[in-house]
Length: 416
Ligand SMILES: NC(=O)c1ccc[n+]([C@@H]2O[C@H](COP(=O)([O-])OP(=O)(O)OC[C@H]3O[C@@H](n4cnc5c(N)ncnc54)[C@H](O)[C@@H]3O)[C@@H](O)[C@H]2O)c1
Image (cartoon, rainbow, N blue to C red; front, side, top):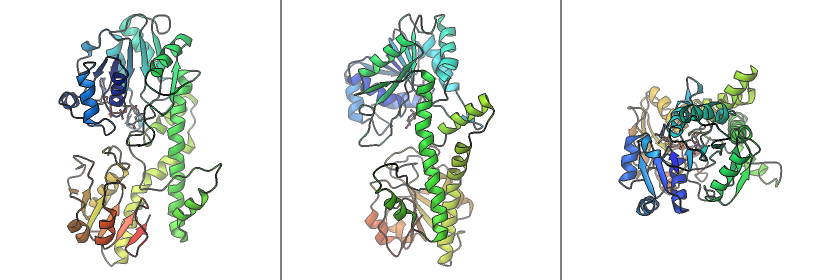
């Protein structure tokens, strides 16, 4: 089989497929990533160096940038990025991947799209490219389906294998082919009636989270002004055993999913129906505003201590978009760092997971050491990685703004 894209989604999938006996070619456009994998270095936390070595040693995993090496596959899975470009879906990676796969399609093979995209992508974008490149027909000649990835990088409980996998096909035989393939990899597959429903299911999951995070974020801003402890209120509401699901406030949303995927849905709705998706627009507005709100809270915290933000030494803890990951894509923590640097603060950032975090040359990479903590006028906890020494933070910092409610209440700690 071929897995196009060896990133956060494609690499774990390729490893699992090798583990379950498949022969896998990882097609990866980024030559530096190919070199790292060949050298036995994994850049994805969920894939250990040992797992990568064992896949290579099995003789059933190879990685390449050469689409010519895709020849002879039975199943091809496309797991390439789906970013926004000028606020609109950018399907160019999917188009290139489909073109590469299409050249090697044979009668009876199966192609699955895993990338997150708007409903209609599999049938309206992927199928015509595969057909054009191969001269075959989707359905009668080859199987085609959509199976969204639900991976949550760094989640110690739910992974690729034990999270139910949605599977769909453009017709009955395609669904059977897609489901039988994933049945070899995961504990449980769930067949969905069509590709559009499976595509929408993935966007519902992410939009649900995006909207609920926005709800608690806006509540947090109001609760602070009303003098109410929103964290205690959420804890209290969470005791209801039905009809409530707790979401926690934070400095905003980041990563490859939440800031982007709902916009794929609203773009499609607006494009096809000519109507705005108001919930998505509102949630995006609130979540996008959170780094500004955190910067405002920093200014206020300094002001109370008669300090101006300009020239103050700030230590930011965490730049990744969520705990225990190195992924800083679209990270709100980075947005906070840039805003504070623009206000003239001496901004330092400590993140043991994020390499090359220098998204802004004014932000200095430092360790989370006693010296740095003590010297900072204010410490801002943005990403609550497990490996920060929180006792040290509480003991050394003169004042902390904790945006994740990770520290114990103390005189030198304030929460978002
Ligand atoms: N990261 C997540 O947690 C997550 C979870 C669920 C779904 N998704 C979705 O899965 C898709 C992939 O996300 P990701 O996080 O793995 O992205 P990623 O950037 O980590 O990996 C994608 C890889 O594809 C490669 N690539 C791009 N075009 C290519 C081509 N034509 N041929 C070969 N390789 C190519 C890139 O170089 C990159 O290494 C996206 O649609 C994303 O929204 C991601």
